[in-house]
Amino acid sequence: MRYVKLNNGVEMPILGFGVFQLQDYKECKNAVLNAIESGYRLIDTAASYENEKAVGDAIKESGIDRKELFITTKLWIQKDGYDGTKKAFNESLEKLQIDYLDLYLIHQPFGDYYAEWRCMEELYSCGKIRAIGVSNFLEDRLVDLIIHNNITPAINQIEINPFYQRVHYQAIMKEYNVQPQGWAPFAEGKEGIFNDDILLTLAKKYNKSVAQIILNWIVRRNIITIPKSTNIKRMKENIEIFDFQLEQEDIQKISTLDKNKSVFFSHQDVEMVKFISQREVK
Image 1 (cartoon, rainbow, N blue to C red):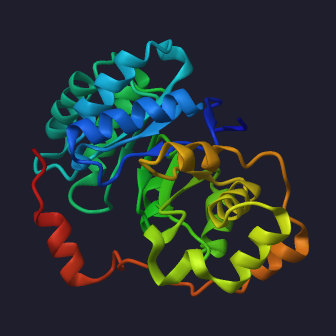
Image 2 (image 1 turned 180 degrees about the vertical axis):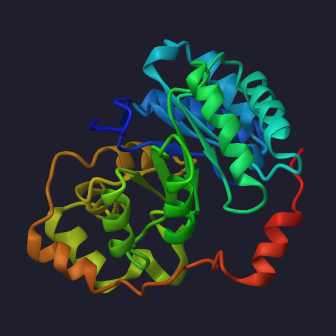
């Protein structure tokens, strides 16, 4: 496994396991157990996924030393900013059954995220969190947060896949020493990504799966990524991507797939902002 050093010196696996949409307790717990057994050490969840308890139970049952694991969860939009963040943080720790987080992210760039960030800075300073960051922040909001606060986010977790490559944004994050982390590396199978002619040709050339080609391409860009699968065979396949290297000409071919827009939705769409902001997480 390769590791990436964050802006505070903490080292984080470049490839992890995500549990988005795994809301069934048994399915999520078994998936995390299988992922850990397959060699994953970065586990990424969120309060809004409503599966932190299943993740925590799997971590406990795995028997793996806590120090070997890198656990990330995310803060959902809080109505009462600072106090809500402290309460939500403690609830996440309780569900995960751990006494500290490796990474805590503000999940959405909405609401009073300045108050949320101030609380997260304090929790970080007290040693409750090893690194703090954000998720889904566009360029302007990320730079604004950096300029007007004491601690620069270690991570910005955003959508990154062959159809939405975020090359320009990666350059901005590099300027401010913020590590990019990509969600939905396979675009959740949308727009025929697994049947794309270019990716299929490369898969055949390297004797790898399309998923392995995509993940290799992402980590080659020094971007952390968190694929998800409940299939043990695919879990193992997804982590076996460090034994080959894409040639530059093939990286160029993948670059032609960039549509420069989200496969899912825009965080600048007013109706989507309303929908996200009104969602309550138990």
